[in-house]
Length: 408
Image 1 (cartoon, rainbow, N blue to C red):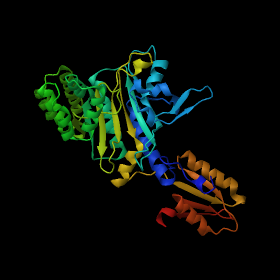
Image 2 (image 1 turned 30 degrees about the vertical axis):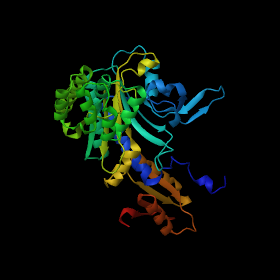
Image 3 (image 1 turned 180 degrees about the vertical axis):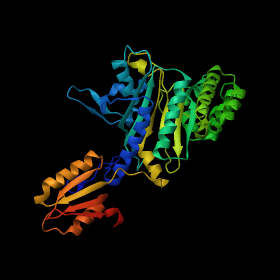
Image 4 (image 1 turned 90 degrees about the vertical axis):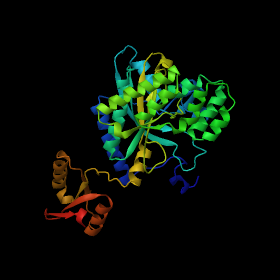
């Protein structure tokens, strides 16, 4: 590879620097603050793990979509495509004896192969939260409420959290004679809102008519609390009815918090993560075609690592969120801008004392020794390029000149 080629990143990953990086850090800090206010504690898991942590039995992404490699012992390792199974492993290992509620939050990157999606990122930064050992609808409601508050903290005003339940589809599908392969095909049709393909597939199948009608209508089962009422009147399936009642309880909890205007019910909502067992949700806004949050309940995942633990959580996709904020031209409050203290060698002590004083007062200050041959105008231009708000120049006599670069 020639020297020029070394400057570029592989397809699917990118450098983030300068103002963009500062804005991301600001958004991350705000969202993390909300999670801490809800009592969630930080956890970090490895960037790569054994392949079996994410294999098909876990219900995570397909093997073909993972970045795999081998260690010196010939173990298959993968760059994590999903952080939730890693958290589940940690809970089974480090919280084995804990029977009461566990709250964990994280920031990290996931990696998936996206060969069929040109322009998509293979590395995505996530901020997530997981609540373990709580099977209640209150836990579901609190996780969704925190999701809404995190998005509000980012500056978004117009967004919706679409809420569904895994057991609506699973309950209805129990009444059909579809094979596993056919069920996967049906899910693809439903995800693509292809009602005609669904009708063709189910036309001559042996199943109750009410079940067939609801499966065909699933892409349109979208709206407020009245959508749940409508579907309850259309089915006698016990599993689906129990799921609908659970969604009603979640709605009540969010209404008490005054957050009901930010949610809609999508009873045809399906997830590509098979480990979800209960409520599932995704958040959407203008400016990006992808979900900015995905989440749900996964009561059987931790048990696969040895601890029977109900759980619910979400992952906020930072890259999609930042894209939406840019598209909507939502200003991101910048970090405190730097002061630049420019000095000559004879006044180094004074410059160091000034910088220490500013930093003690939480005002970022950078030091730069002035070169005798470089004119002051070049340092002013440098400061403006680097988001310096004020330049303080200590000349040979010790006199300080201030330049407000934000006004220049």
